[in-house]
Image 1 (cartoon, rainbow, N blue to C red):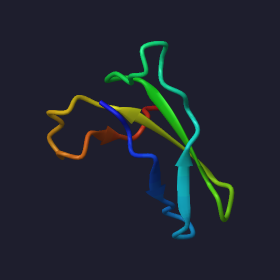
Image 2: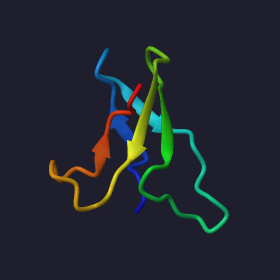
Image 3: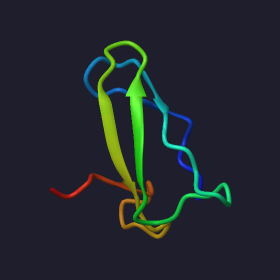
Length: 65
């Protein structure tokens, strides 16, 4: 699974760019933490890659704290 290169910033509506590199094989796996940074407000967004069969169907879930 490959996370999108950009996502929308929830705070300002700008574009957030993926800044986490893939592993040595060039892939991401379920459970991996990926980080995005907004080009406008500089907010950081941490997302966890979930299984492709996620109930919501979007492949993402917020990190648990």
